[in-house]
Image 1 (cartoon, helix red, strand yellow):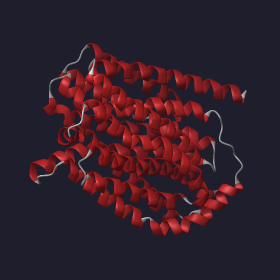
Image 2 (cartoon, helix red, strand yellow):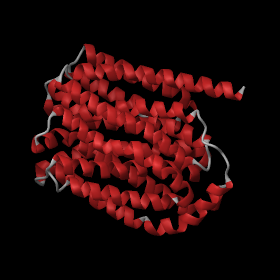
Image 3 (cartoon, one colour):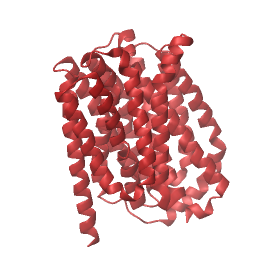
Image 4 (cartoon, helix red, strand yellow):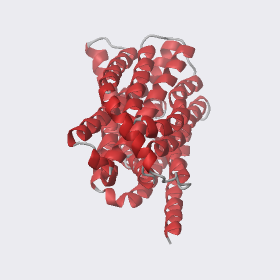
Length: 389
């Protein structure tokens, strides 16, 4: 087995690298989320174009993981991780310099390309080297992502208060760290290539059609996560009339998601029931905000939404990766593509709703989508049960 062939030190290095990458992705994501209104004000964009800008980052998720997944399985996951970190760093550097919509859109697409491939391939790598403990380590890696996303808004606020930062400063920091990680991963990439090719050639496990159910689940999840996280600032500002609380609520959302992922790693054996409860819990909270919008309920509901959604990404990903050993990067790419479609659609939808009916109604629509996510999980479990009978 692959995990037996990899030395303990090397396995530790690769695991730590994956955790660092996920923390960096979360840091950029959280910073982008809290900076979106500032970018709109600086560049002079409409709410609709702000959604298009967010979709520029996440639009790359639709394409890049699907194109790169099979290559990573055959040519080396660490090599692809290194290159993706450098692409991510280049996009972040551009976001810290340019101030026109076209340039920012291209930089956001570059960030999304590196971001999406790093996330999917690192999950595949964790799945291969930890095998039966894959779900636990994926939950832990997503815990690091949540911690980074929680730290992003707070770090930006501290930088603004004490160092005179603007939104571009955090992008520059992410670009520098991404370049350091990308270059630092190159020696590991050279050792990884031949072994990964041999592993992929020895397996004949096909990518199962049931993966499409999980891809739809990813669509629902990323619609919820991106819609809520990128427009939470706007919701608190326009619907709750308390813009000074936006950064705190967003950080609390991500802190609860980090806590939830830690707990889900401990109770991994119950992941099937947890997935259904997660979608239903998020749907109920969004329904409460639709009918009773107020600041105290906002703090409570967004915290509970973060806790509820915590298990979805790592558990869906682990179900897919574990079902197709040897093709883990390809499977992760398919799931990420499903997620990318949701991440593109949700910001555009909410941007249009914000210009028209308001975010309150838009968040209510996300609540209905969360209930649909629970039904998809039920259908997936039924399909798997039928195949095994």
